[in-house]
Image (tube, rainbow, N blue to C red; front, side, top):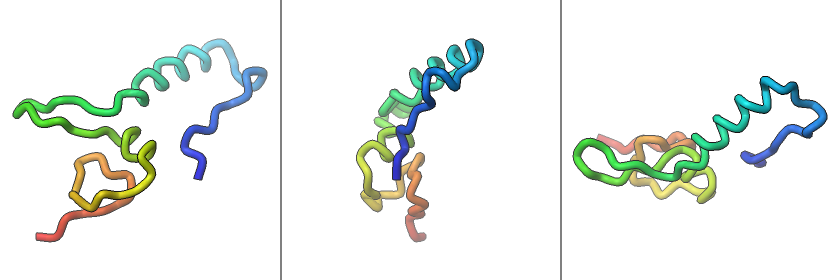
Length: 68
């Protein structure tokens, strides 16, 4: 599992370089505060942590859904 694999520099086109830089900035955000003031972890944070906490997180990349 390599979530952070990057392209080789020589494989990039100049316009792709700009897109990748914008995407990297967005991916590096680990959390934000929602309208109610709660901290919400991003998918990037969960992948970086590497395991599911089984709390039913909004951006869980591991597919966990809390039971009703």
